[in-house]
Image (cartoon, rainbow, N blue to C red; front, side):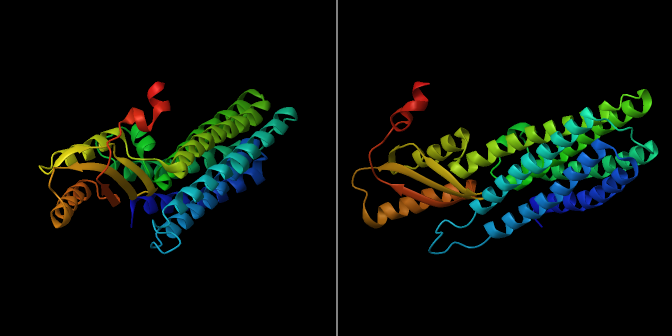
Length: 312
């Protein structure tokens, strides 16, 4: 089982149990923040299922209508998840919290609140540890934030974002319930619900930004491009190499095109042998690059190809 699937299954299992517990807690206590947390966990359950749909759809083999495969299905479904977090998670929690802050109702049975929040914190904490551990195993040697930004697998970092938001949301809910029960400031419960909503909206915006970059067509990082160019330039039959162009069609499916100037007199089978040699070395080092197109042509610099970015 892939690390992404393992993290998603762990998150779904935790969220099913937590959503049920939080719903029971809301029924017994009437706590606004508990209701927001129940909605949050229910949305996370559905989001996990959508991520699994995206993973399954993206695994379909390439065909005539999709010659580069269906990898971007995962990017699409991850974007849907981000929108649901924004609307159903953040929007509903903000509205529910606003209403309870305007018309505060003293929550009953505080013991239920504390017990369920503690139970949920253990499950969410475990799910967060699993998702971070699985993600870091596939991004060794890179900091967590940098790895998330560079990752081409939204199913992995989406689970991390959701689990982190859930854990922080539980802390906010606990503070709101505690202030309400200990000091009689019953608006705190509604304010805690709005804090949870704002947290979910923030997470959703971050996810939407990451998914947008992938859907539009994100390429490999600069270090990878430099290394690819160096591999081609190191071949004795190559005299110069143009700017490598890459695009990801899925978490582990990238396209590479690059102009290469071969030495004079190289043609036919000899040129084909050189091309195969360069492609083999590149794919051994970067197995995510599934399609490589090397072509003899004019060399264009980065400033010539991307005049806007170079001018900034």
